[in-house]
Image (cartoon, rainbow, N blue to C red; front, side):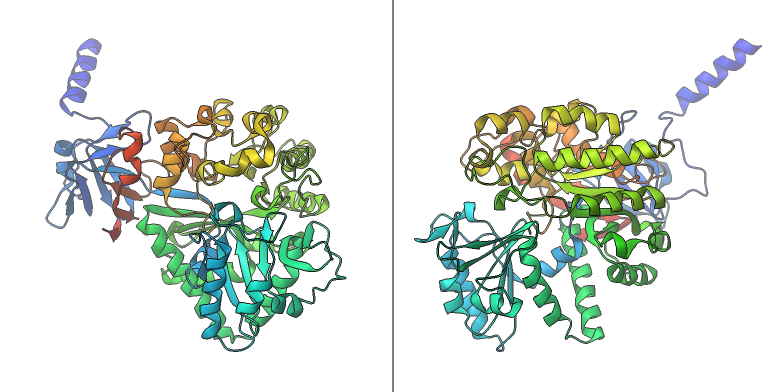
Amino acid sequence: MKFILILISSLLLISCGEQSAPRAPQNEIADLVLTNGNVVTVEKDRPTAQAVAISGDKIIAVGSSANIAAYIGESTEVIDLEGNTAIPGFIEGHGHYTSYGDSFYRLELRYDTSFDAIVQKVARAAEGARPGEWIVGRGWHQDKWETKEDILVDGIPVHDSLTAASPDNPVMLIHTSGHGVFVNQTALDVAGITDDTVPPEGGEIVRREDGTATGMLREAAQDAVRASFAAYEALRTPEQIEAELRRAIITAGEESLKYGITSFQDLGTNFYEVDLLKRMADEGSIPVRLWMAFEEQAADMDGKLDAYRIVGYGNNFLTVRAIGEKVLDGALGTHGGWLHEPYNDMPTSHGLNVVPIEEIEYSARLAIKHNYQLAIQGIGDRATTELLNIYGAEMAKNPDKTDLRWRIEHAQVIAPDDIPRFVDLGVIPAVQGIFACSDGPWVEERLGKDRTLERGYIFNTLYEAGLVPTNGTDPPVDEIDPIGSFACSVTRILPDGSKFQPDEVYSREVALYSYTMGNAIAAFEEDIKGSIKVGKLADIAILSQDLLTVADDKIMDTEILMTILGGNVVFKK
């Protein structure tokens, strides 16, 4: 009798077809069904499927088109994917959300191929500006300019032509990395920077041989200009300040959705922003799901963190559970990344320690006390070593605190001895695949050939060591497009056709995992995001091609056809 019961049970299971998507009970009707597609789930147990059933904001079934048809009722919206590919919504693993939104209302400098073109752009802006009004742009990078100026100091022009183009308006042009600004004389005057000004610790005022400022301010030296600009913006009414921040939040979200991004990990928020975001979450007006990390002084955070820690607020649209993007060092592009050995093309410099070690240690104590993740920037190998020292020391004092998932943001240059330390401490290297291609043309100039090969952008080496693979584009630093970052992650092809560190490419599967489940794990969100699975949020991107199989030279042709957020179609091409 026992054998017969087992046999009957087995036959019943077989007759039911796909066990993960059984025939729906009469009262279980989906609100939305995606059918006739190539569903890439990013789940080992069921890597592919044809259809997905969604009820409310959750996935209720994944399976074949025939099986999922059982979930279709009179009120069900059915979308025929016509063979196109469905993947989990992309998760931007590192960016600056409100800065990205705000960047659409500043001068765009990423695509200018000369300093003169930027000067002309500023001149046009100055023509329509009120005297004293600030002119702000972002995105320039000196290594991308095809034409070089006659006078260069440390590879950067001097401000004379910029000052002539805008004599009555302070100008602040933010480097694409955000780790330096180029300003005109008016901005220097407003900020009180003179020939005798001593740069702050962790910063550099680039000067000509005669001691006069060129206009280039690296790392902490830019703080005086940014403070002057902030003081100017503070003259706005509270209503104007909130309206412009809301505009940035909405714009950043709408632009993200166009790229199939349904979640955005923001490294650098503040208390005012979080207060507004909570109100917007209550209104249901945040466009994408946000994971936020505070970039505040440790002393200012002390005493506030418990009240501000929230997870899944507003139906999983707002999470605040990290302290992040305090920059221990600067960027390689501005010679600010903190290195063990000097720069190959600037032998007098090891880069800069921007934020004092003591400040990071204070933040680490706060993070472990209040159950926050720590996510600090470490670009150069010296910065990474110092961060691992800080993380390891704090973890050793608190052996009962496990699975912290502390992160090092960017992790672009890493000493070989530090790789096993990442593994031992469970630290996540939060990297951006696109940087290997946007930085690749000049990295060897900064580091030299041998150091680049051993330590530069070794993302696959980190993955093979057992670390969580992550991805992103650091908007507005680089183009937010996940397809571009995916392409670089799996090809490392530079604009001239050469390959940068080709042994460090991700496989197609790892690259997709890094942009979905990997980023979800890095935010403690793997139970609700990162894959197409029953019970998870219905955040899905529909692509015109299968990223796992399309030829290398066709990846960039991939289009985002549709973005689904919480079961709602929020973008359609």
